[in-house]
Image (cartoon, rainbow over all chains, first blue to last red; front, side):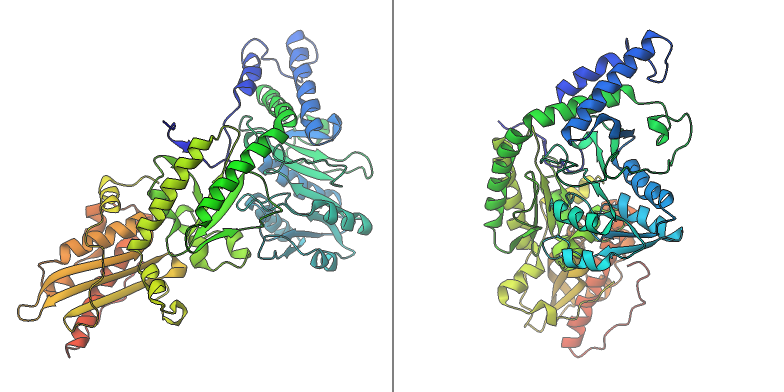
Length: 405
Length: 139
């Protein structure tokens, strides 16, 4: 018997690996010291634990431990990177280039920058979710200080060409920041090979705890500096004040260590399950894959089931299977996914999408169960869908005057 | 968001899903909403022209669980009513019956609009003047 409910929303968050929890526990009780307490063993112990974790975190992305700034998560790291660079490099310019499928933590921070007198270019993506390098090059100007492009997208899993992006940026002397929240721990990310100057990521997307993340800030070639956004005791080399979340950081470190050791085998196993799921569901009529089939994270699949609405579809099995939809009805804004719309999908297809996010603990029988439940519900709802009936009768739905509200 | 028991009930066992022959003069069809908005409802009534009573009602809906439930309950309520009674069904009655949360009120509005559209289609087919309704406030 398959164990229910099944969790297939690993792009939202992941469970803590039991090994991570085990590593964290002592730092809540016996080793509870403040890592900034320099004068007693409690502090030394905490500091040692943080140093060790910093090393583990740095190693996963090929960085030096000194280049890791711990934050409360990726949103804070995104804010620190963009606002911090904007303020630090004001004398050099005020122009930032990003793209229109970034996470809100980047897009809304860029909106803030615009209010502060900055100029932001939002590159469009093609229908696979990739930016066009020629357009990127054309957008760079003398005042450009930062290119902020995500490593991999959270809704469709498309992986951006980071090496090519950074090569272009290097030529023009522009810094590269990437929100790698979805990529780190899932696919190999190396700040040197990829030519990245700043990189944001978080523990809870890679089987670590919530509430802890990091910003990588390059120290050599070039030496990058950011203006602190949180002032106080001068922690994290003055770039991020606030008492360190020692248990969280220890858990983050352990999570990174496990990912480093097990990423390849996890990715191989998970992508096989993902492909099984995807291939089975795409056998349904009028089912379409969203995003790039190849340049993609191994654990994500985003599929639109035309003529059924995403939230209605989820309701068919959401007691048993945890999934996300790009449907407006599942979001607070009542707008369908801006990421899917950026790919050129019509609102109708965006409303009809499901995102499957597999993970380290996903099993084959869970995938089999999901294939059956989703297929069954799609067929059932299509029997109920006036659009499906029109499609089957060959009626041109674009010719109908719909009452938009 | 969690759904009320009633919404879940109608979603799992929707009443009166189907299609009536829209070429028949005593069948009225209302198609409201738009695919881009994530909701399309088609509601049909079959009227006994002698008595003016609605003898059958069917729906098909593209939308969330609340939209499906709203159209399901609407078809239930329509059967046995006269065409004139049908247009007095208020969306708030559906909201109350299904315990719809505020973000789902538009589903009930759509159901009310679908009823009115079906009735007007029936009236038009039978040489009666179409009823004019005030624009619904919530969309």
